[in-house]
Image 1: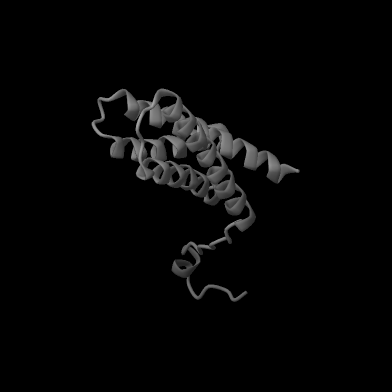
Image 2 (image 1 turned 90 degrees about the vertical axis):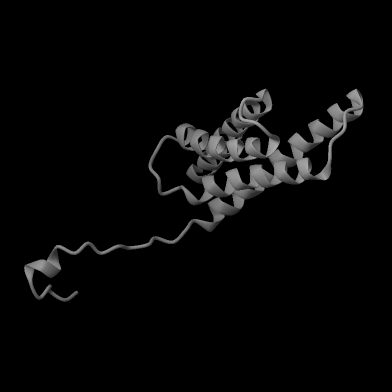
Length: 134
């Protein structure tokens, strides 16, 4: 390593971009897809039993949202925060994004999606963090 030419050069902060843990990203996205497919399965069973209608956009946005939560959790392993808090934040962000597509913010569905997103984020982050420690 070379010495800095002046004290001004010595004060420059050298940024180092550590590589992303792709194993964590893959595991968390796959867990998000599994959770999304599980939720979609429950929605289909509920819709069949109650003869309610649903469309493919609901299915696609649910799987996309849970996959997004998994991706955010996967790339955030360098954020040194409790996995429950980190998963909650990313889950609420993605859940609210899904809620905005559902309609008005004042509807119960908006807050239900935010809550389900938070629970999904916590679940994914805690499970993937536990799997990393093994």
